[in-house]
Length: 50
Image 1: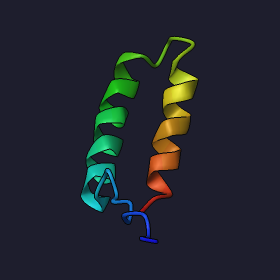
Image 2: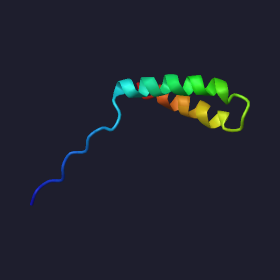
Image 3: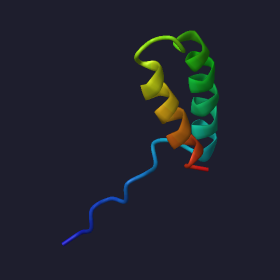
Image 4: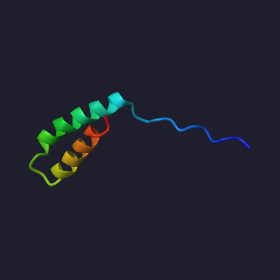
């Protein structure tokens, strides 16, 4: 019986930093829309992944 292959990370630590920067830029464009809250929450969650 063989063990299943080990899963690999999809994103690197650097990727999360880049995504956080991109979300911060996008937040400026959507700041007065209902979606701005969702993107602000995403921005903060990405910051906790350091």
